[in-house]
Length: 449
Image 1 (spheres, helix red, strand yellow):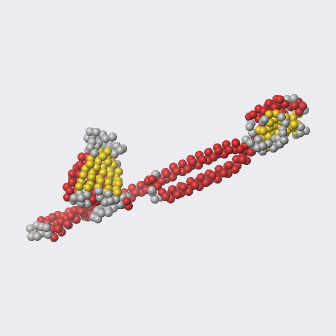
Image 2 (cartoon, helix red, strand yellow):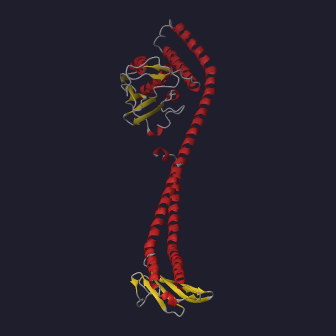
Image 3 (cartoon, helix red, strand yellow):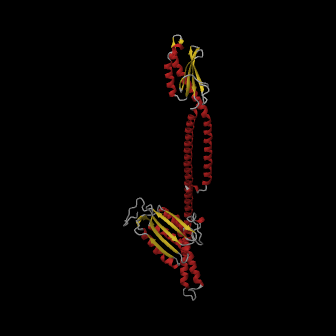
């Protein structure tokens, strides 16, 4: 995540993500407030609807108990109040929001009154003025178009707050879950977009690198044709001139001899530059074979030991024993290691120390390190140090490290550095042990876990 957010586009994207999240939470809060305001009306409407349905059922029971051929016989109904009371009490037990039930005849006389507390007559403030502010729904008992009586059902307001709070809690939970899920999905989409941006940047860098390699290839072809042949001719002419001048008194060790020697050195440097161009622009495909990595590194160290000693730099090796064999192209990989060692030797100067290290990696890979006690790499140069033609050293070609990276990547490995200014730099290479289709020609005596 840190690497993603470190991208230049990351700051603006993070700010946009935060602003959008705040707006989303604010909209969810506003929607919640509007819904909560509507809950009171919805609960009351639901109470009225259920009360009206309950009053209708009780009215049907009253009519069924007291009906005769002339309509509702309230005298007959009065003889059946026990049955009616039992029906009403059962309804009260099932519906906690019903406070009381009252049955009146066509003249307004009370035939039956049943409250949640039991039977009896309503006291002062009954049915319409109970604590909790209940309200009443009324259903008339009809015979044709003529009212025969009515059933009143009192609805308790004391149960509404509890139900309202339950509805609000449920709604709050749903809002929190929905908002959280939206934020999580938004975060996943945000990370995916950043991944695509980073991937696109990597593809763009790969494209630019391919274009640079193509450009270098064309340049290398021109250099090979236009420079190397004349350089060879110049070098041969200088050798002939040096041989002709040998008998001349004072030539050996004189100014002319130094001039010839420096000219030959520059010709050799130009030849190496042209060769490096060709090697970077037209690298051969690696031919992998199973090799003992320590043997390869030991060979490189022996090859460079005299050069290091001549320049006053100490080259040490620290090779972990019993490393497993590794599939690699020995010639190409040696070139990558030589480039790193030569770069370190040029940096540390006289009396410096360079260490060539091998070890087993934590994930089964092998690790090669080139460690020096030089001045270190400035932080602003660490990202550019593997770029083509970049060199902070006078006279450098800027191709040694790019060639090393190219070889390592063709081996399926990675290369990088860690550096502390004033203390030194360590370049590391991580290589996979095996490549598909390579048959091992030698097996290691022990596999390091």
